[in-house]
Amino acid sequence: MTLVLVGGRGTDDIVPLLDDLLPPEGGVIAMLKGYIDRGVRKDSEGVMCIAAALFRPNRYKPFVRQWNRFLKKLGSPHLHATDFYNRAGAYAQIPRAKMDAARLEIPRLIDDHVYRIVSVSFKEEEFERVAPKLWRERFRSLNVVAVQVCLDGVGHLMNQLNQHAPIAYVLETGEEYAEDPLNLMDRKRRAFTRYRSHTYADKGEARGLEVADCFAWHWNKRCAETIDKSIRSARKELLAMTERNPEKYKVHLFTGERLERFLIDQGCTRSIKSA
Image 1 (spheres, rainbow, N blue to C red):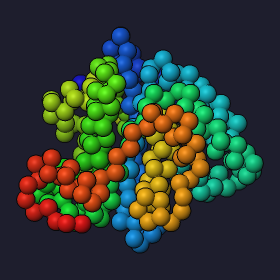
Image 2: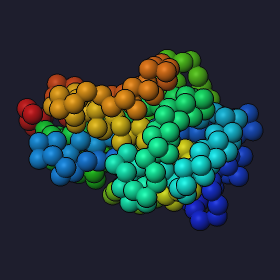
Image 3: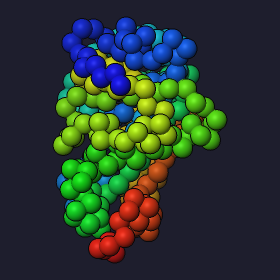
């Protein structure tokens, strides 16, 4: 296992570490970012999403260059999806025409450079209500569970693609992990998820995490506003991403019967409460 903590040196600290994180023959980089929407709507039950943006190493370096040019043109040092799509914080000062142009450019950049995106979603309150207490305590937090399930989704995708290349996982520091979720994986799960190494990067120090953040924010909104409550139709930015190249995206929503089946598959044979 390789575990490296990076941050604070430049516009993307992952690029110079690729040779350390992956073997000489290459592999895949998976950048994971989570988003949870608490308290915006009282009936949202804390919908949360973990997204993994997968890159081939030879596409990641060109992506970083293009993404940095995009950010320079926008006039922002990084992309923070919550503020960007709400035109809040520093983005409130950027002219609307420039913001609209940036919204249109993001799906193209993702389609040109990202290998695949895998995401998983849960409802925090439903999970706390349905999953047995002892099972929840075993994993410390829903974030830890969701990261491991997202990694399983990556493993299933690699099986479907008949890909056996090793994967270097990158997570953002400061996330709400009660414990390092990748250190909790046993040998069997590491083999299934093609685990080669993992590292943490500070916010703004790994551009691939900004792609994962962008998709996690959009998929979270789709779960809360369209799939669950039918408050609004799917946002056009999400449709622009997924309709360009739909096979690039694998999304998994664990709620209702699917959540119960998931828990049973994980060994929860007692005390599962109906949602």
